[in-house]
Image 1: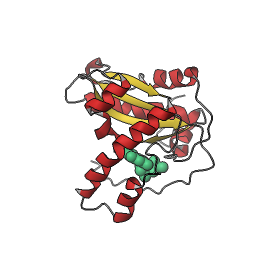
Image 2: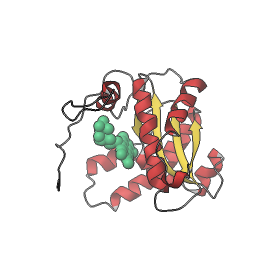
Image 3: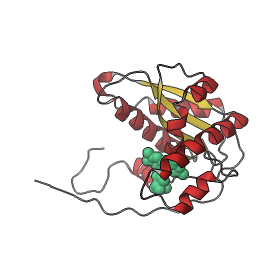
Length: 198
Ligand SMILES: Cc1cc2nc3c(=O)[nH]c(=O)nc-3n(C[C@H](O)[C@H](O)[C@H](O)COP(=O)(O)O)c2cc1C
């Protein structure tokens, strides 16, 4: 189909997936099978990649006790970070400090996008791969949530050892994936703020 300047968007299924994406924080116990995860990884690597470096490497964690250990490891790091963040409310800090709170919301699958490269666009590539993965998940009826609060801790030596991530790799992006439990309300967005259009 030839794109038209007068019609809103030429690819409605993709736009539907974009509008349907939510940060899902409640998951059904269903496990994702390897084929489903592989499909998401295949979508991730179709992201644009600066200088065609394809800098990404993936870690898939589906071991629930290990996910709980990683959550327990990461929470104090993030609480410490929040204490140094002027706009962090005590309500948010208390939530992350609660021993019962699971940073990964009891999702059964955590996917990390890592890199051992450095350069101006390496992290951009990894985050683009993350968005591809998350939109593909939505199209497959799955839910996702970026768990940025885990990333600092996942880059510690102890976490990398638990995950068999070689020292030269850095975790750039972390997201959970699973079958959503119930509906997640849409969050608002401001209209696009166009700074210039010349
Ligand atoms: C870089 C990044 C880090 C995020 N980290 C977390 C996180 O640690 N925990 C969480 O519950 N949500 C996290 N989120 C999700 C945001 O809170 C969410 O995208 C935002 O509230 C908008 O909601 P929506 O994604 O449902 O539209 C993160 C999102 C991004 C882009």
